Amino acid sequence: MNNNKILTVYLAGAIESISKDEATDWRNLAIKRLALMRLIGVCPIIHGIEFNNEKPFTRTIEQARDIFETDLDLIMRCDAILVNFEHHSVGTSQELFFATQVLGIPSFVYGDDKILSSSFTQSTTTFRCDDMVDAILHIKDYNAPNISRPKQYSYISNRNVLERINSRWS
Image 1 (cartoon, rainbow, N blue to C red):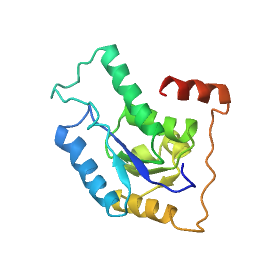
Image 2: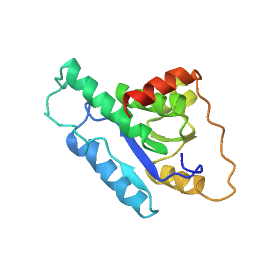
Image 3: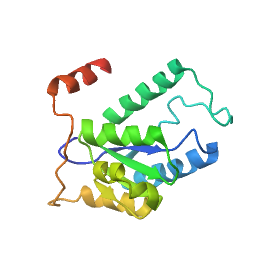
Image 4: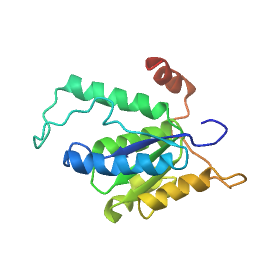
């Protein structure tokens, strides 16, 4: 993170289990709202996700791995993660874990109460928010001078692991 200021925000949320419109509409709105605060919303859909409208998606393991590695690379380039848990998503949970527990960047999470109340989500969330607007306001407040920020904890403290992760995508 650049001087504890958030400049770029990764937009995590379901993609495969919902329609293209559901996956893209909230991200497009978040990008516009973040831009009003001179922040950049980073959307994984723009970076190579293709919709095939099949339920469930049919991807090879290699295609899934390529998408996952691209998403992790994008997260590593961001200062925060905005998580939309209105729909359950294993991939979103993995992104949240990676961002908060491996990289130690703040997360701003909103969505379905059942998902938000899970012990996993609670243990990996920096800020639990009411909705997207509330989450973006928390991001704005996080950037305010002299704000008390929660300490970021990482379950993965082995520096060698982080160096291997960083070298893989550099």
